Image (cartoon, rainbow, N blue to C red):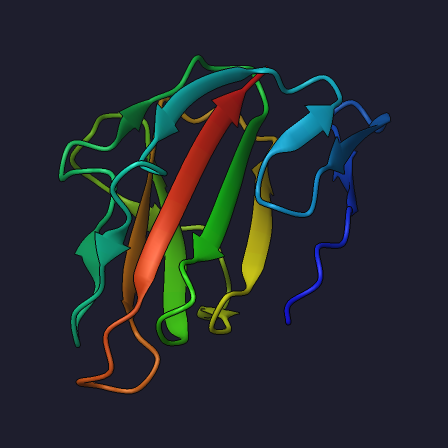
Length: 143
C-alpha cells in the first residue's frame, strides 16, 4: 500500500527572497504563490520510450517572462523514468536546465522550479531502463 506524503517546496527567487509551496503529496500544489496551471496531462499520462521525447510537445509551453514556473512530474505506477527540463527564449535553441537526469521512481514524483525568466519551457522523458516504459503525468504552473 502506498502512502501519500505532503511536501513543502522552497523556491529561491532571483531577488534573494524565498517562497514556499505546500503540495498535497499527490502531485498538486495546495498553497503558495505559483497558482495558474498552464499545462496538465493528468487525464492522459504520457508513455515513455527508450529516447528522450517531449511530453509537452515540440514547441514547448509558453511561459510569461519574469514569473516562476513549477513543474510537477509524477510517474503513474508503471516503471521508473528519467526526465529533463529544457528552456528557450526563441522556441528553437533549447538549454537543458538540470545538470543531470531527473530520476523518478515507479509511482514517485519530483518537483522542479524555474525562477529565471525564460519564454518557453518543456519537459522530456524516457525509460529509466530501455524497453520498460513508464507513464508520466506533468503539471506546469506559473505565478
